Length: 113
Length: 117
Image (tube, rainbow over all chains, first blue to last red):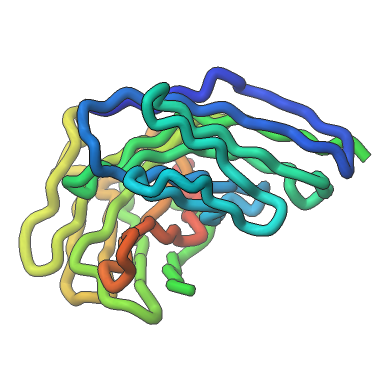
């Protein structure tokens, strides 16, 4: 089975600064999808960004971007110009070709005013 | 964007009673929905995959007789916690995949916090 590893249980960033959350995964598949989800204190999971494995270009959504390194099986999330509302748990997720989803253990992000 | 609604958001019940949680896809059809359980400060644990018109697929270690799942239509799945006990207290989250989207990301409900007294 695929595994998703988030090695940073907690991270903090100063408001307006940039932070990078790391995620690695293990798979033998060549066709898959990767996601970052955010879970704020309200507890609803919100999709932040997605990446198709067959695309070499890194996905970008406003202040959020990823560094997708397929060979290294790495999928980090960069948050630029951090805002107080970015404080949340962030989960990295892998979707296999067979539509199975696997989640990392999460990184708790604190934004310091 | 796709919306998944979950109800109720909070429920408190007495030990031994049953509780039903509903999960609806509001603007798309979902042949498959997923039920997760989340403990404080932990990741999501997949409990079962709910399949429209057929039996749910349960993950190893999840009691199918305790956690009854029904997926009666393309927009509704229900999770019933039967004879609930305090150890069943948890945050339950449903999700669905919008198959109309190429990437097929999961959309999540708001979650339901169950407290069993």
